[in-house]
Length: 226
Image 1 (cartoon, rainbow, N blue to C red):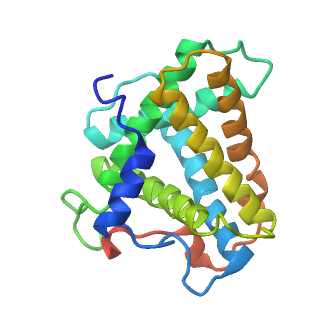
Image 2: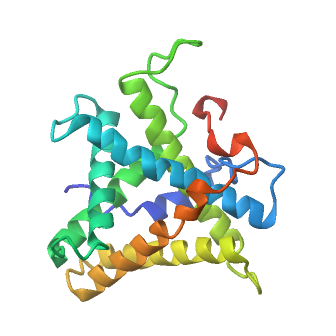
């Protein structure tokens, strides 16, 4: 992939310096501490459910639009990572491991870079559909992940992190390790180990999906409000 060397955490950092990211925008400003960290996981858990369902709607069909194709690739790659945790599936090879994480790095970069774009052809008051809907999904996924990573960066020095902050810090650390894997083109056991660690971090917030949200606003992000 021509853009495979673009690592998304670099763009998170660059975007922060440029002021294009608003801190914790996927969570209500009234939340603090563990309630805040929990809400960030809830938002990402919602996205984690949404991506595979978008893929299921398409089967193996290729998308017709830019945003649609990004969503489809993300959905497929998330499924591959989940299957890597399931011993009933054949293990992925080192080459497959590197390819998946390289694709995710590129597509998350797109989610972050395009998260502030106006919704294409949006007419206020009408439900989003087609490319409009996929653009919104892409923006929301990028926003929710960035908010979580920003919270991890801001709280990495916490002396006694609680349950949700500990989970958040582990996820951020696992993503950092994946960045090392892709930057060195590592197709060895380290890539598979990092995949399992990352998958466990994402899979570990299944509790967040069923937990009662702190407020209804936790689950919704309007990209047009940025």
